[in-house]
Image (tube, rainbow, N blue to C red; front, side, top):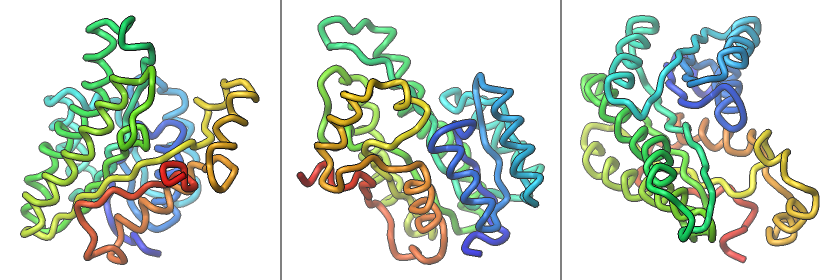
Length: 248
């Protein structure tokens, strides 16, 4: 197992991509602490599912965009599992509208949840990783952060900010054997995309060279690679999981 004995924090893992990452990490031998903000029922279901499969898993209600909550989370995880080897900054939201109609609250909240949460949790975990002189930080961005998208100026800005943040962290912490990479998913079929009408979904698929949407497991398996020693010489990179969408 590629992550045997490693301790991981995964934010926003009660559903979708985060849930798939938690499931994948447990299957690879990691001890997993995951966060949720509102879906406590789903969080407890995931906790029970993964514990029943033999995993060491604990869910924490935490808003990683709040500095004090991020610090408290790291402290609790270290107390429960002894250390933190891996951080997956996955928490994110959308609040889409054209820029002309976007208000300040819609802008601020998306930036706070998507971008500030990466800053807060990464800063909170740094001391633990610096002490261990090891760690892997993986930030979940989006192809929208690479190429932009009409009606998503706030989301695109937050996800593009993650890419610059990732490169800066990689440069600052590389000498201490702490790696930081970003993943930019494309059209991944989750509960969120399930609400879209078939015509919209087919339009997305037609724009993808592989002619299909991705699955949460596609992102989760890349996270395993980037979290493991198999990628020990990779840092500061952005890897797209998009079926070729932004090369089309």
